[in-house]
Image 1 (tube, rainbow, N blue to C red):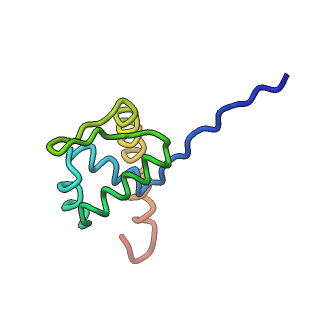
Image 2: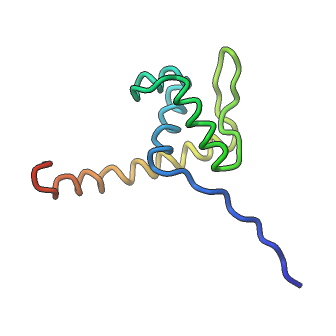
Length: 101
């Protein structure tokens, strides 16, 4: 008998992880938008796209508050770890490119 396996949710790219991590840390779309030089609407649309990509709500939104869901807390921890691990690699690469040191 063949068992069907669930297809894993897609993973957000590095830019999406950075945006998500900024919103999670700020606790506000508006604050993250200011930090990133984007509009609040653009940040909101990108978060909605990330939520569609991972197949789960990442934030509980109310008119006065923004909080991470359980899935959001899990992704936030992983996003921080990925971004922290990537930083030294990217810096090392930038230093090795002539004219960018």
